[in-house]
Image 1: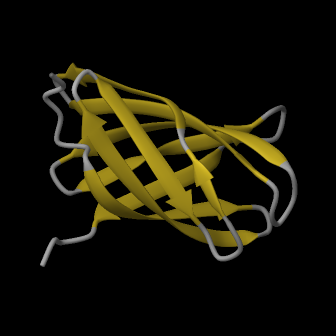
Image 2: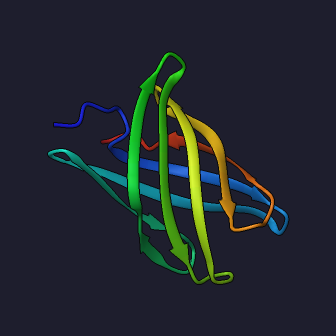
Length: 108
């Protein structure tokens, strides 16, 4: 069983050369597997290869996803989760890294 603080819904902001892009990520723990879905303004896509490594500075979380809007890209994410905050970067192929910040959406 996965012991992680990651599962739940997160609002992400990615600062890119074309402006700030927002998305909502929903991470789910199912036994020994983490899965998820990203919802953006124009589409919803599955997250692939969600991995968590616990370290002294928080949980290092990585995942990948493919989007088609605003353009077709394969994205790789690496963030550090501490409590209800995450911070890190994403990368699309050879494009420069994009800064990523996120905040957990409180459950009602």
